[in-house]
Image (cartoon, rainbow, N blue to C red; front, side, top):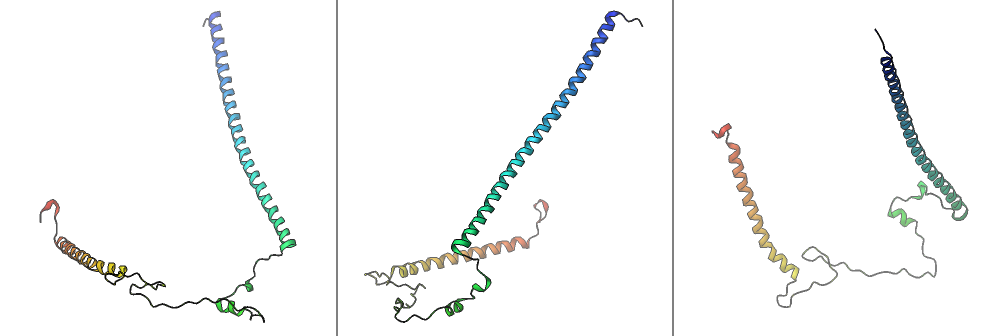
Length: 182
């Protein structure tokens, strides 16, 4: 094999080019690895910042609660209710009442009267308006006028349901074969 100077020279350049390509590929992979590490670090920093904000808020809230408790103890003296402070019902509440002191004014009482229920099922404190011509309240007149319409509507619905039931009975009594042959 006779290698000439030009041939050796071109083989040398090819070798140098291959080495440079391999080094640039390795450098590119290293740069991408560092970029992914930087992105991961940025995500971790953002997570830690959120965690720090949460902890600061929690600390401030707890310190405010402690300040409020101290203020309550010093100024107001409020306490949470205990189990024995609750009452069972109205009778126990009434038992807690005191007799009026001598010279106390009498309690204010309001008058009320039980009224019999009207024909429409409502107990009203006011008298119903009555038509001067017929002498019947408008609510009673409307109820009387609506009653026949409702009866007719109910009868029509009952007839339609009976008709549907008969047609359903006929359809269920038949055996239908594929292709429409019976």
